[in-house]
Length: 442
Image (tube, rainbow, N blue to C red):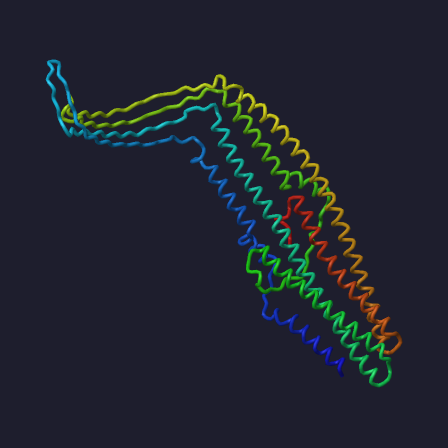
């Protein structure tokens, strides 16, 4: 009876730890996971903020096309003692002479032509905004891939929990059978001890998987961007994308792979930099306008009592950088070299993408083959276990042979679970490299 009590304690612990937390837990669907991540994921939110900054920078308000208007005003007061000596030698002295001055002006300046540098720079800002959107897309893709890698890991562990629980129940039934057989002298004490050891090992395995599941759920909550203690279950069903072909994927990658698109955008930016550097040698024309007002009160000792002036000034400027010590020439030479380097980066990225898609396709095909092999292996081990269980019930096989069939069936189930979700993650990785992740069926 001591062994049965020990078994009941373990079973009660498993039931409490394994099922109490999952009471009334909602299922986190794949669609909900995507929606929550797009709204709350920290990396995605940061990327969206960077896009907003780039959008502000690409505004006409930051282009240099609008005029600059400024206003100034000043007022001064003075008190002084004045002594004037006339031609005839007479001296006039006045104490506490007060004078005041008021000045105000409004000025406008506008660059009429700057050698097209302003136009190139504005276009670069707009292209930089598009580049920031590509960078945000890369963050979104990486975040979604990480989230669904964690999501499918939760699904795998959830199915492993059920698989391990079935094996634990089988070991529990075997332990009970061994106890009764030992009480009636049908089995040796060794069979009872083996059954107890196997049951304890299965209990430990169950609790270990349960701990891994809870840790992975917290990890998924963090990736989504919500409270890590949120309780949930996941949808364990999988839908694989049909009709994938490596040639089509390679063609798609050339057009929509995010890394290639970023390198192309960076190449366009370096071309703008070259044009901006060339524009520094072209003459620039500017216009200025000002409206001025001044009022002076000279005080008692001045020839004039007061002076009031209002006027408008108009002007034009021509600036031509004839020679600046070679700085502009050096800048132009460097931008040409940087453009060549960016072209090399683009070509390298294109080749790397072809390699990565090809490697991902091989991994995906291997994962599908392993999935089919593990499925057949599971079916074979299931049939073998059922026959062995029947023979064990009839006393035609030993407990060791039964345990081996049980372990084979357990490992085949766990391997099949691993193969299912590994194939799906390999598929999503392949779709990301080909540029189709955001349209994928998760």
